[in-house]
Structure formats: C-alpha cells, structure tokens
Image (tube, rainbow, N blue to C red; front, side):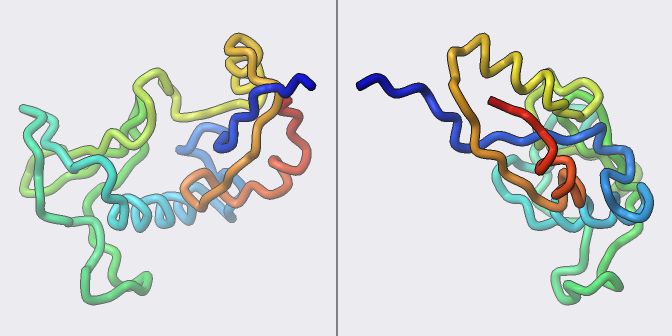
Length: 143
C-alpha cells in the first residue's frame, strides 16, 4: 500500500494588511496586534540593530479587553514582519517566513509549493491573525 505525504499544518490567506473577512482592515489589525502581544515564539527586536527587546508594549498585561490595546502604530510590514513604534524606535517580530513579501499565502502558491515538494494533501489551519476566512478556506482547493 502506498501512502502520500500529508502536510498537517497549512495556511492560506490574502495580504494581511487587508480586511481579510473582518468588517475592515482596522478591525483585522486589532486582532493581529493582540496576537503579536501574546506571541512568544519569536522575540521582539529593534529594527536599528536587531537587538532583542523584552518589554511587551502592544497590549496591557493587566487588561485583555480591547481597552488594553496600546497605541504603537502597529502595522503589517513586509517579508514576514509585523512592526510598531516604541520609545521612538521601530520594533518588529519576524512572525512569518521572510519570503512572504506581501504577507499573503494564496491557495495557488501553497498548492504549487506542495506539488513541488511532493505533498499529496494539506490540513488547513486558521487563526484570527490570518483573518475571518472560513469561507475562503471552505472554497479553497489545496491538494
């Protein structure tokens, strides 16, 4: 019996600076800012020298509600990064791979990558970071 390779953790999403299924891009940005506050896999860094920054400035540690959001000019960067301002300097987290130039993962590109690697099928994952995209996922063909 022959079994194909299954990618058990795949994502598809439009450019993250867009609304991506939310009412507007600002609402989506709010969800992403909260997610980057909670994200701990990659460190925050200062852009000027790439030094690790330990202070979490994106959200109040004491208030998990929307009111806990801190003004930091949080934004979707390029090449896998989310960026913001703190203490007069740009900081970032390298959340996604650097090849994600426009911070998107179109189904067609994900499918081509899987085809190239010999992957038969993929299990799709979702998170608010990628948008309110249940309909996009339901209609996607990533084999």
